[in-house]
Image 1 (cartoon, one colour):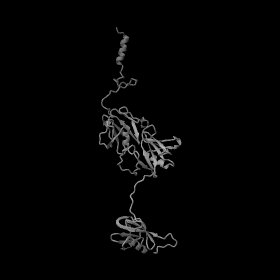
Image 2 (spheres, helix red, strand yellow):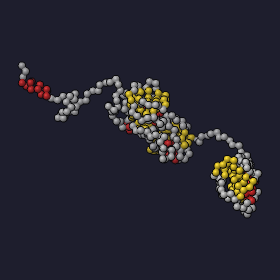
Image 3 (cartoon, rainbow, N blue to C red):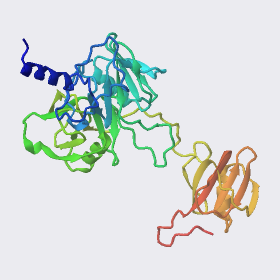
Length: 386
């Protein structure tokens, strides 16, 4: 026979709200923290809009050389100042810029960062390829495709900018081995994914560490620093502080190069040499085109500078016919107010003017000359004879 005490206990249980399974979510009197039900596995990838991924602080994101899906879903990776979020089993539905062979997920983000038009990149884990895409649109579920999506839309490089375009800086990893010219004309060679190690490992070989917004700014700092011949720049998320620029007293030939995913280095080199086409010139010529840039001393002692394919176009004080530009200049030297000539080669017409300075009108078929003063102006008692 059931006791009265047992009946009372059972009645209390019957009226107690059950919170473990959230069967009574409207009950606000229960002070206990409700227990969340375990998620039910699903064959389809989660929709990021209905099941948002918790935000990860990029500065505290774990450094990984290899990212694997689905366990690294939601992790963030910073490369060259661009923060990407990994979305596993999601792909971009748009026309790609191009596909590139790629071995790792992280390298796929590096390739996108190196392409100014790229907003998102898809890594195909099966074919080991990376697709670069220009549109900033949400990815869609796609098996075995893992997307790097920027946390902020990248600026369009085709949009007009009020400021002048900065000097081109080699972008890693696509332009490994490229060169950069600093603001003062110092040349650097770039090595991607490596850093400097002194053979003697002396701390004095590190001049100092600076903060630089870009790789180019880091190299400019080295160029302005006496004795600096190489730099290390932390460009991507890793076990070093982002945007750190280390200036070194050592360079190529004095360093050991060690692979380091997050760091790029550059060292100074001699100016590049190029084959330049030789121009046919004559030691002494006063007719165009070989007389261009020549200096002619007239028979009256006045010196002229010759410009081919140019015309002064100034007010004409006199004109006549002369057999050559040389005769035209001699005639100008004999004419007191004349200081410049325009000579029409085919018509053999000489136009005399008073212009002091170089001609500005580009006119094929013409030659011009302007006075530089007396050939003997620096000699004591020199005179042009005018």
